[in-house]
Each structure stands twice: as structure tokens, then as C-alpha cells.
Length: 271
Image (cartoon, rainbow, N blue to C red; front, side, top):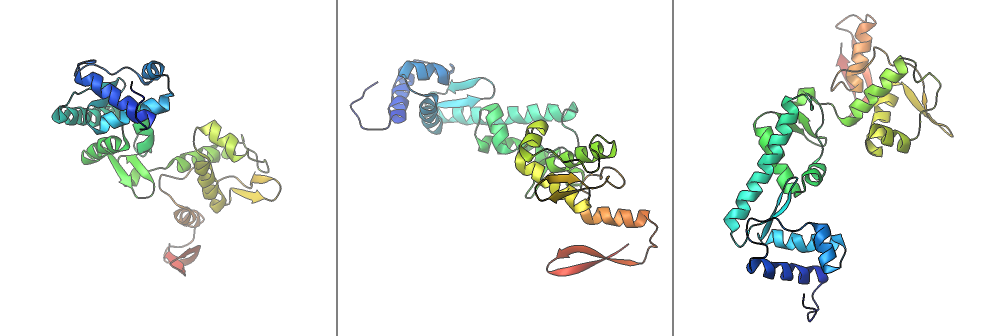
């Protein structure tokens, strides 16, 4: 590799690999050496190699294949486009099988585009194409501000809903006794395999229901058992309170002023 230029290292590596491909080493259709192998060959970090290969992908000389690596496409843009199409179709087929086999059930939230892109070693755009293909088949649906879910919006349960439901079960069965202090957000995030923001949202749901409360110097404490057990999918706090009021025998036709505020006004809800 020539060092006569002041271009960044990754650019010089990309140019060297491009030159080799032009000379048929490796030939079109063959797999490009792995990032680790290229890093050893050029004596650089894998991140630098990744930047170089990204340059080659942008020019259509190589294309990523899920679970395999990067294939040399030569100078044929049409071949690169076919490979890109195969990528998102392959991802869609994999997710389709997970849905039809029951690994992903109705209402379950799918991983985000970034997570899918990382799993299949493709771009976020390719992951998005796969999700849009499944949406066109009505296997999944996007909910604004929440993500992609198996089935329609009526089934949707966010990860926070699922985590909150697990807390409710632990509280109702006595695994988490009234008065006990919940572990911290970091510990719970690691235990449930989610991010801290998901734990925080689950806490917000339970606090709104009066199941837990935040106490200065202690953290979140179990305040009471959940009334009526776990909430059905997409049942928010307002709907939950309406269920409770009806369960307690308030005659239909009465009106209850909800504690929530919508659009700056108190909302009157018929029951």
C-alpha cells in the first residue's frame, strides 16, 4: 500500500483493495477477507478497516450478506443492487419465520432498526426495507414513537409494558412484598435485558397505578398490590381506573372526572 499520499489511512486501504479487486484478487463473486484478517494485513485497527470497506460498499464494489460477510461485486452496479435486494429479503424471511413459529408473538415489540442492522451486518436502510416488507404483508405494524410490533396496533405491548407486567406478577404473588425496596434501574435493566429508559417507563406505569412510589433516600418502594392483576395490552392508566370503577359497582351513566390532564383541561369520562 502506497504511503505517498496524505489521504486518511482508511482511504488508502480502500484504494488498495479496489486496485486488487480490479486485478481479480479477489475475483467478483468471492468473499472479501474478514475485517480481522484485513486489519492484520494492513496493521491497523478493525475500525479503520470498517471505514475502508464502507467506502467500497458505497461505490458498489462489495456488498454485505447477512451472516456471511462481504461479497466482491466487481464493477457491476446491477449485481450490487441485486445483492442489496437479497439482503433485506433474507432479513424479512428470517423475521417472518420467527413470527410464524411463535418465537415472536402478537403484540411483541421487534428490535429496532439499529439492532437488526447490527445482527445481520447491514445498514439501517436495509433493515428498514425488511421491516417495511413485513408491514406490507400485515405481519407487523409501526406505532409512532414506539417502534415495530408483531400484528396490528391493537396488540401492541412495549417492552416497558412487559416489564411492568412482570413487576405486577411479582408483587401479586408476594415475591415483592408491600414495603420492599425495588433494586436500582441499572440492576433491573441488566436483569430484564433492557435499557434503563425502559425500566424508568415501567416504573412510571406502576407509579401512575399507585402500585409503587418513589421515596426520598430509599428509591422505589412497593406501595400496594396491583388491583385486578396485570393489565391487558395497551390498557393505559385512565382505562385501568375506569375498569376499577366499574368493578366496584359505580352505575353506568355516572360521570367521573379523570385525574389526567389533556390539552390543558380536565377530562370528563362517562362510565
